[in-house]
Length: 487
Image 1 (cartoon, rainbow, N blue to C red):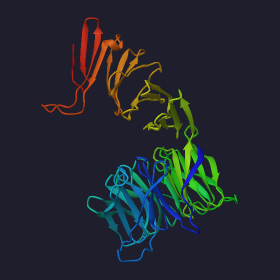
Image 2 (cartoon, helix red, strand yellow; image 1 turned 180 degrees about the horizontal axis):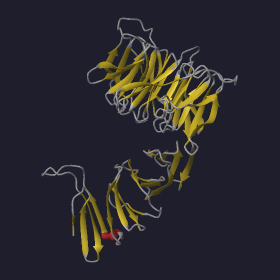
Image 3 (spheres, one colour; image 1 turned 180 degrees about the vertical axis):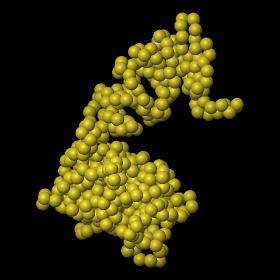
Image 4 (cartoon, rainbow, N blue to C red; image 1 turned 30 degrees about the vertical axis):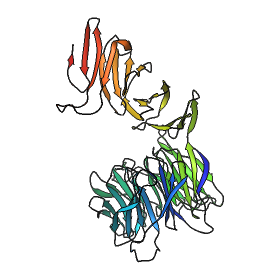
């Protein structure tokens, strides 16, 4: 992973003014950062400051002596949740466009201080926050009420919180070193492990990473168990004998979950997972003199940037990629992970994120007619329309010698001479719409129709049909919605 400094988006203060939280909106259009001055700074996708607002105390008549402990955008990018040390979580409605009126749409008042906050990616109306009394709660936006997901049996202070990449689970780190995991599917909380120190730095990607004052970085498998039911032994990087390394204070995985940045004093380290070796490796160290402790980290959801916040309130932006190259002088491919590639049209600077939803390594990217994108992984085929920004990933086991027909809007017809088969893939759907066998694959002897998605007068859905030659005298029309074919 290559990290290149881009710019400082928030200048440091004269003294200590800790950056307490950084978060990006899921659509990558906004970044929010806050320091101990309690003012939320809003930036656009390029790191340009666009807006700001002051947070409010739980008691409107009370003093502003609280600290923002955590922030998170909603999955639809329209709301921003802010957890505060004065026992409250506010949810601000920001909208999708700059300049829209900001308003508080939800608030969750508690009996103890909020210590951390996350918004799981698949819980559109539920956010999760932790308390100083060791409880982890879920706040329901529809009812404006909070309920306990689980509580530490001894009430140990919760210092950190992280959500799983799929949004189906959360994990919490506590003052006694324990890390607990809660799954929304089974509704139960369980102890994952006991870390070697208080896990102030906690994040969840391909593994759960934990680090703290003992200068050890440990990777735990959240799903693997030893014979006695305990968590399998972690992979540990021990920097205890390195005098240049101090305690770790923050951690954040990239969106693919295969690279993590862990912050300490005047530096942050990057670790990458190598699937072929089934092991984590240190991929580099970024040292910045006089940056002081890295207190907050946030990856842009497309994986292209890392925001780094520090003790004096500065926030720096770094360009992140594995590699990048130009395609025919018209496009630029930026590999932000093995499974995520940003495709940018150089003439307009418009971008689209090509991502394998299965986490497979993307290879062999081609662009046809300056519009249609084709890429492969070991087990899937990725197709996309750069104008509509619709992408598909379908299971595929081809020879690599397939031909592609882009003449029909909304679909691509894939010709496999090896199998004597035509496959129809609709952009934006991750399954093959339909297949047929014919030796007559000339585009002039084939017709595909996919209508707009609206019901007809009889209540039937959209029309999706293919007409092709079975032999020189027979035309077959097949309903791709699952109906019978007409000969």
